[in-house]
Length: 515
Image 1 (spheres, one colour):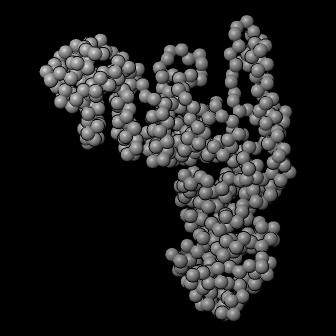
Image 2 (tube, rainbow, N blue to C red):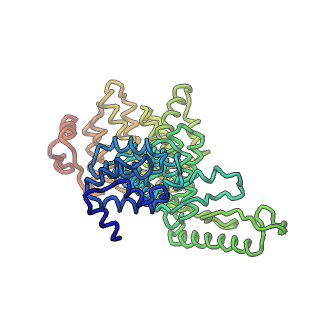
């Protein structure tokens, strides 16, 4: 130590002696490289310059150059190029990771993804990135919706590709997972993949979640993952697969079951899960193979089934509350709309086909068919489908397959046609609008309609060229009497009400002007 201080303090500093002192050729590990950097930074700035010039090419020299560039805050592109040019020399991974953290902080995920690929391709053992970096990369990829970064996290953390490079395929589980991502992170990643149609990655996330977390304990995440599965398949244009996934998803909602207490459902799901878990444990203890129950001569190789909530002799218990809404699946609705439009264009009579399609698949798809028909301009057919739904599913409550939101779709479609194509609106269309309103009342079991739904009907009715005060005034008066509320209208709709013959006195009773 005394020799070191004296050598540093002398004016005739010899950089070669310093390099020989640190035994440059014997430094191979990251720890020894860190030690050299610490020694280097203790030198005066003039001595550092001489050492850098005298130092032969290699990991230490390029690591020192990298650290100097980062300290001087040189352009990120220059630092990136320096790392790429010298990655084969195995420069200090800690410095490279520090630079990558700065890129993540700046939101430059393209550079991070490119650099990670370069590092792992060069030497995956030397450039082993920390869990903290992977966790931050996952968070940033979700926040910015970066598909390439999310895919990198998936193939390195969620389902590492190292598993698929093995010859031995006895185990179907991937044991190379370095750490667990939180359920909320899986949820966010699934949204990124679904928006890009990456249904394979979404399915991988679902299997990862099913392996490490409880479907029942994290029902909100499980629901998002299942919705993402349907959406990613629809985004990829796989209609048959998306439709099958939709039916499986719709069957997991229990909003249509009037005779089952949610508390009983919760208890039964937990009971079934524990029952199946104990059964699997007993099979393992008794060395009974599920594939071959009689073959006990070899070791037990169980077919592991996580989150099993169903008993063979018991009823089916759905795991989600409520019902599936049209707004939950925008990509699926878009794909279904395309298919229905093709059907309408190629066939004259489609009502029987659509009713058979709904009856065969699931009652929940009825509201999607109605919304799609409204969007492509076949409003009367949408009303006809809504009118036929109770006869298709007589044992279900009406709220299971139609609610006020679905009728709002119909009212908005009527309004859009009246405003954009007024010349095409016929008296038959006007009567169909009134019929849809009375149908909505029947679906609502003659209870007062929600204010939002009723206002949608009124604004739609007033946009019709066949609107009459004598027809509308009794409807508004009856609703106001039953609901004990008034509706708010904007200025244009208020003027339409005056134009169709409603008096200011009537409007003051039932309507408030929305500023």
